[in-house]
Image (cartoon, rainbow, N blue to C red; front, side, top):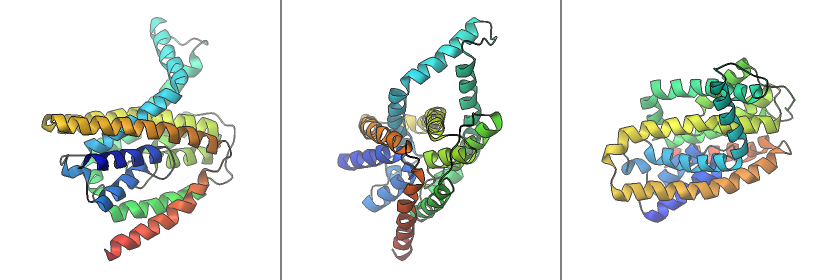
Amino acid sequence: MGFWVVLILAVIQGLTEFFPVSSSGHLVLAETLLGAHARLVFPEGVLFEAAVHVGTLGAIVTIYRKRLVRIFGAIILWARAGFRRKGSFDDDLSYAGWIIAGSIPAGVVGLLFRDIILRTFNSPSLAAFLLVLTGIFLLFGRGKSGDRGFTWSAVLLIGLAQAVAIFPGCSRSGWTITTALLLGIGFKRAAEFSFLLSIPAIIGAFLVEFQISGESLTKDLIIILFAGGITAFVSGFLALKLLLRILKHGSLYRFSYYLIPAGILFMAYFYYL
């Protein structure tokens, strides 16, 4: 891939990771249209995609750093207390447990069906169809909100939504936040959990892909990964700040007005290509 193509793909990843439009779906479409499919460079997996996701992970850590410090602090205090719960850190400790539980479905699906998932990254027409499906799903969240807290059953359902979003074209933030809204969880709480829930998934996917493709890495490929990650971090940080403002108005469903026609147009384009 030309270096400028790497930067374009990284910007696309950063801008679309947090908006409910599917960053992986847009990467598949962009790589196909640009004729610079990342697997021409990393033929054994999706290491490039995983690396730019790590870049956007940096944006999550930066914006939610105080929350993450409290969560990790609660785990440390719990360990120091002999793994006995105390009221002073119970809430943050429970939150850590919810993140772990919610990450299980995506981890299981990703490991068991990795080969099938990889094949979907080679199908821009499927990605386009799933953009339409995501747009339709977002519409179900219109007017939905609430003030319910998290339960273990709710967390697992949100985790299942994240597992669905492994496939390109299914927005992770769109599916998880909308699922939370349908369960009566408010926008702010749903968004925070959605973004923090992505941390184990992104780290796990990157480690798996790095283990598979790591031995074939050269200095030039490492530079590509690093440049893509940094670019995705910058664009992702700006996109996440903007999305958090949009979520205050409860208008996540409006992204369906882009996803549905865009997906239909891309399906028509690849059908007649």
